[in-house]
Image 1 (cartoon, rainbow, N blue to C red):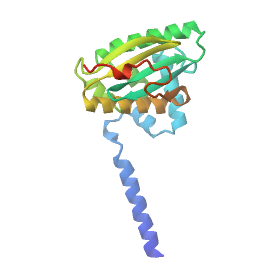
Image 2: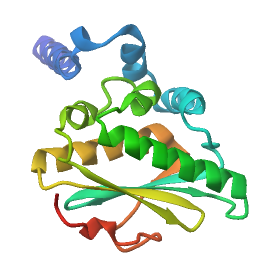
Image 3: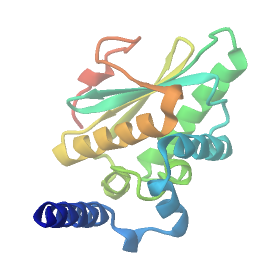
Image 4: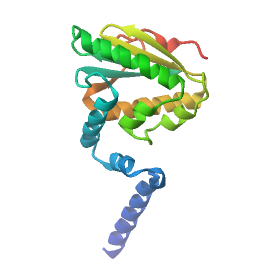
Length: 192
Protein backbone atom coordinates (compact mmCIF):
# COMPACT_ATOMS: atom_id res chain seq x y z
CA UNK A 1 0.00 0.00 0.00
CA UNK A 2 2.82 2.37 0.90
CA UNK A 3 4.59 1.56 -2.38
CA UNK A 4 1.41 2.30 -4.36
CA UNK A 5 0.94 5.62 -2.53
CA UNK A 6 4.56 6.61 -3.11
CA UNK A 7 4.37 5.64 -6.81
CA UNK A 8 1.20 7.70 -7.22
CA UNK A 9 2.82 10.68 -5.47
CA UNK A 10 5.90 10.45 -7.71
CA UNK A 11 3.71 10.27 -10.83
CA UNK A 12 1.69 13.30 -9.74
CA UNK A 13 4.83 15.30 -8.95
CA UNK A 14 6.29 14.37 -12.35
CA UNK A 15 3.10 15.39 -14.14
CA UNK A 16 3.11 18.72 -12.33
CA UNK A 17 6.73 19.31 -13.32
CA UNK A 18 6.03 18.38 -16.94
CA UNK A 19 3.11 20.78 -17.25
CA UNK A 20 5.06 23.53 -15.53
CA UNK A 21 7.86 23.05 -18.05
CA UNK A 22 5.60 23.41 -21.08
CA UNK A 23 4.84 27.06 -20.29
CA UNK A 24 7.71 29.56 -20.17
CA UNK A 25 6.48 31.99 -17.51
CA UNK A 26 9.59 34.16 -17.72
CA UNK A 27 8.53 35.55 -21.13
CA UNK A 28 4.92 36.25 -20.20
CA UNK A 29 3.50 39.47 -18.93
CA UNK A 30 0.71 39.22 -16.35
CA UNK A 31 -2.19 39.42 -18.82
CA UNK A 32 -0.62 36.84 -21.16
CA UNK A 33 -0.09 34.45 -18.24
CA UNK A 34 -3.67 34.99 -17.08
CA UNK A 35 -4.95 34.27 -20.61
CA UNK A 36 -2.85 31.11 -20.95
CA UNK A 37 -4.10 29.62 -17.70
CA UNK A 38 -7.81 30.52 -17.81
CA UNK A 39 -10.57 28.09 -18.81
CA UNK A 40 -11.35 27.98 -22.55
CA UNK A 41 -14.82 29.57 -22.23
CA UNK A 42 -13.46 32.49 -20.19
CA UNK A 43 -10.56 32.95 -22.63
CA UNK A 44 -13.02 33.00 -25.57
CA UNK A 45 -15.12 35.65 -23.80
CA UNK A 46 -12.00 37.75 -23.14
CA UNK A 47 -10.86 37.36 -26.76
CA UNK A 48 -14.32 38.42 -28.00
CA UNK A 49 -14.18 41.49 -25.75
CA UNK A 50 -10.68 42.48 -26.93
CA UNK A 51 -11.73 41.75 -30.53
CA UNK A 52 -14.23 44.62 -30.32
CA UNK A 53 -11.26 46.96 -29.87
CA UNK A 54 -9.49 45.68 -33.01
CA UNK A 55 -12.14 44.38 -35.42
CA UNK A 56 -14.73 46.88 -36.66
CA UNK A 57 -17.28 44.16 -37.44
CA UNK A 58 -19.31 42.10 -35.00
CA UNK A 59 -17.61 38.83 -34.10
CA UNK A 60 -21.00 37.31 -33.25
CA UNK A 61 -22.38 38.31 -36.68
CA UNK A 62 -19.53 36.58 -38.53
CA UNK A 63 -17.80 33.24 -38.84
CA UNK A 64 -14.04 32.93 -39.19
CA UNK A 65 -13.01 29.95 -41.32
CA UNK A 66 -9.41 28.75 -41.24
CA UNK A 67 -8.32 26.35 -43.97
CA UNK A 68 -4.81 24.91 -43.76
CA UNK A 69 -3.00 24.20 -47.02
CA UNK A 70 0.38 22.73 -47.92
CA UNK A 71 1.67 26.27 -48.61
CA UNK A 72 0.04 28.00 -45.63
CA UNK A 73 -3.68 28.58 -45.53
CA UNK A 74 -6.78 30.63 -46.16
CA UNK A 75 -8.53 32.78 -43.56
CA UNK A 76 -12.11 33.72 -44.43
CA UNK A 77 -14.48 35.97 -42.54
CA UNK A 78 -18.09 35.65 -43.69
CA UNK A 79 -21.18 37.37 -42.38
CA UNK A 80 -23.85 35.00 -41.06
CA UNK A 81 -26.63 37.09 -42.64
CA UNK A 82 -25.32 37.90 -46.12
CA UNK A 83 -27.89 40.68 -46.55
CA UNK A 84 -26.17 42.59 -43.71
CA UNK A 85 -24.25 44.80 -46.12
CA UNK A 86 -22.71 46.95 -43.36
CA UNK A 87 -21.07 43.93 -41.69
CA UNK A 88 -19.85 42.71 -45.11
CA UNK A 89 -18.34 46.15 -45.78
CA UNK A 90 -16.64 46.26 -42.37
CA UNK A 91 -15.31 42.72 -42.77
CA UNK A 92 -13.78 43.52 -46.14
CA UNK A 93 -12.30 46.79 -44.91
CA UNK A 94 -10.71 45.07 -41.92
CA UNK A 95 -9.17 42.22 -43.92
CA UNK A 96 -7.73 44.69 -46.45
CA UNK A 97 -6.20 46.72 -43.61
CA UNK A 98 -4.69 43.77 -41.76
CA UNK A 99 -3.25 42.38 -44.99
CA UNK A 100 -1.30 45.61 -45.42
CA UNK A 101 -0.17 45.45 -41.79
CA UNK A 102 0.85 41.78 -42.01
CA UNK A 103 2.87 42.42 -45.18
CA UNK A 104 4.88 44.95 -43.11
CA UNK A 105 5.36 42.43 -40.29
CA UNK A 106 2.86 44.28 -38.08
CA UNK A 107 0.81 41.69 -36.20
CA UNK A 108 -0.23 44.07 -33.42
CA UNK A 109 -3.95 43.36 -33.98
CA UNK A 110 -3.73 39.61 -33.30
CA UNK A 111 -1.31 40.34 -30.44
CA UNK A 112 -3.85 42.66 -28.77
CA UNK A 113 -6.64 40.13 -29.22
CA UNK A 114 -4.86 36.82 -28.53
CA UNK A 115 -1.76 37.81 -26.53
CA UNK A 116 1.91 38.11 -27.37
CA UNK A 117 2.57 34.39 -26.87
CA UNK A 118 -0.02 33.27 -29.43
CA UNK A 119 1.32 30.12 -31.12
CA UNK A 120 3.01 30.84 -34.46
CA UNK A 121 2.90 34.61 -34.04
CA UNK A 122 6.59 35.14 -33.17
CA UNK A 123 7.69 33.29 -36.31
CA UNK A 124 5.30 35.30 -38.50
CA UNK A 125 6.52 38.58 -36.99
CA UNK A 126 10.14 37.56 -37.62
CA UNK A 127 9.58 36.54 -41.27
CA UNK A 128 11.48 38.58 -43.82
CA UNK A 129 9.38 40.80 -46.10
CA UNK A 130 8.03 38.70 -48.96
CA UNK A 131 8.59 35.37 -47.21
CA UNK A 132 4.84 34.98 -46.80
CA UNK A 133 2.67 36.07 -49.74
CA UNK A 134 -0.70 37.35 -48.56
CA UNK A 135 -3.54 37.87 -51.01
CA UNK A 136 -6.92 39.51 -50.46
CA UNK A 137 -10.15 38.44 -52.21
CA UNK A 138 -13.79 39.51 -51.83
CA UNK A 139 -16.01 36.45 -51.39
CA UNK A 140 -19.77 36.13 -51.04
CA UNK A 141 -20.71 37.65 -47.69
CA UNK A 142 -17.18 38.67 -46.72
CA UNK A 143 -13.54 38.35 -47.64
CA UNK A 144 -10.53 36.10 -47.39
CA UNK A 145 -6.80 36.29 -46.97
CA UNK A 146 -4.63 33.63 -48.58
CA UNK A 147 -1.21 32.93 -47.05
CA UNK A 148 1.51 31.10 -49.00
CA UNK A 149 5.16 30.42 -48.36
CA UNK A 150 7.77 27.91 -49.47
CA UNK A 151 9.33 28.00 -45.98
CA UNK A 152 8.17 24.88 -44.13
CA UNK A 153 8.79 26.44 -40.71
CA UNK A 154 6.50 29.35 -41.63
CA UNK A 155 3.85 26.94 -42.95
CA UNK A 156 3.94 25.22 -39.54
CA UNK A 157 3.75 28.61 -37.81
CA UNK A 158 0.71 29.57 -39.91
CA UNK A 159 -0.97 26.27 -38.99
CA UNK A 160 -0.31 26.83 -35.25
CA UNK A 161 -1.59 30.39 -35.63
CA UNK A 162 -4.78 29.13 -37.31
CA UNK A 163 -5.29 26.52 -34.55
CA UNK A 164 -4.92 29.19 -31.85
CA UNK A 165 -7.50 31.41 -33.56
CA UNK A 166 -9.90 28.48 -33.94
CA UNK A 167 -9.61 27.78 -30.23
CA UNK A 168 -9.85 31.41 -29.14
CA UNK A 169 -12.84 32.32 -31.34
CA UNK A 170 -14.81 29.24 -30.26
CA UNK A 171 -18.31 29.11 -31.74
CA UNK A 172 -17.52 32.04 -34.04
CA UNK A 173 -14.85 30.05 -35.92
CA UNK A 174 -14.56 26.79 -37.82
CA UNK A 175 -11.93 24.77 -39.61
CA UNK A 176 -12.28 24.76 -43.36
CA UNK A 177 -11.18 22.18 -45.88
CA UNK A 178 -9.33 22.95 -49.11
CA UNK A 179 -11.83 22.87 -51.96
CA UNK A 180 -14.84 23.16 -49.62
CA UNK A 181 -16.75 25.82 -47.64
CA UNK A 182 -16.62 28.38 -50.44
CA UNK A 183 -12.83 28.07 -50.66
CA UNK A 184 -11.73 29.78 -53.85
CA UNK A 185 -8.59 27.81 -54.49
CA UNK A 186 -5.94 30.02 -52.90
CA UNK A 187 -4.47 26.92 -51.30
CA UNK A 188 -2.81 26.33 -54.65
CA UNK A 189 -1.09 29.72 -54.79
CA UNK A 190 2.32 29.94 -56.37
CA UNK A 191 5.17 29.91 -53.90
CA UNK A 192 6.90 33.28 -53.44
